[in-house]
Length: 367
Image (cartoon, rainbow, N blue to C red):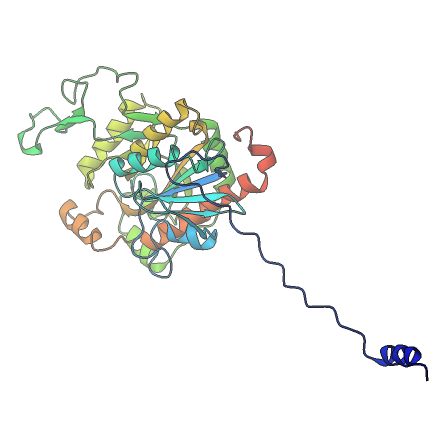
């Protein structure tokens, strides 16, 4: 047989060659980061900044503080080194959510948010901000586990003070605004003394309407705790969502007399428009930094929301002294787990709405 024909027959009888296997498609790598404190031609776009203040232990896998649920449930998987702040940043490149832990206290929060806002690696110009933290809660207004959207944050640190054992008989407190001649001075507050920050009222009302029916966690432990507040009907209710203003002071205060002071201070600086509901330590530092950053276009101060959930009451139930209750709470807040979960459930409802309809909210905040 012709050798050429033989070769053709053998080739026809041979099994067909199989195509080489193709590698499986790989997910796109996260956006690369520019160097810290260097010019950055392509900063990471951020649509939502979740601001928390502390974590108890690790960021994942143990008792949750304020940050842990956001990191795990919103898959904030890209670590961004942040040596000029308290805690490294975490980012989700798909949803463009950024998580920050500022550290406790207004000094740390102001420093961290300023550093964040000036970070050239991030584009925060259209970002919404959700401050989400636990708080003391006024039993006159709500129960532990409840979550309050703030219209105002009032500073409790810029003040005069004398020891309570030395106050005149006609003074109800030894702590009073720095621009007044005693707590009974009726002079109006300074127009911009730095003691009060007003949040975007339309955005706050929108967030409340969106979340007011979100079911909040309840358990027998916090039910027993709230049942002790026999003189405060709102303190005995199961956790709920409300609008209530935030009082920011570096001192962890407690008791009925200081609770009255916080209410008076809030009414004074908001000229009767505000109502103290939650106590914390960071908001005036955070909001002051955002106000300054907004002036240079790095952020938009009208895109900020403040949500605080009650982990403990700001005054004791009947029959318990302020000192005893404070020391017991320092061993572990009765409503810690409930408040952390409430923060996520309520805050995430807003995050989902904003990000799911970014075409609607990117240019203009909702009202």
